[in-house]
Length: 93
Image (cartoon, rainbow, N blue to C red; front, side, top):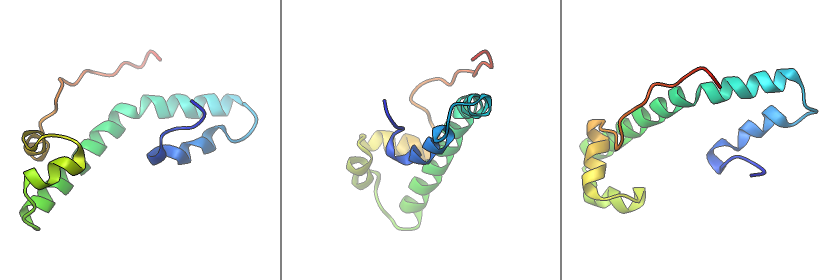
């Protein structure tokens, strides 16, 4: 993979210059922060889905095709349910 997926393209700045120990440290810190990033993204998505439903009256059925999931899953997102059990991250990497 030459570059990160579109929402994260700014991370290429971490490897823009010649390879250094500082780059390795920054990349390690980014990797270790992924569980926190996932938690934040889930919380933000839940907030947006709930707001669209409560404030704008958009049904879960209408949201589902845009999110690529079934209406039941959108309902679960709004309630803060995860599809899989969360695992504790390790600091070994």
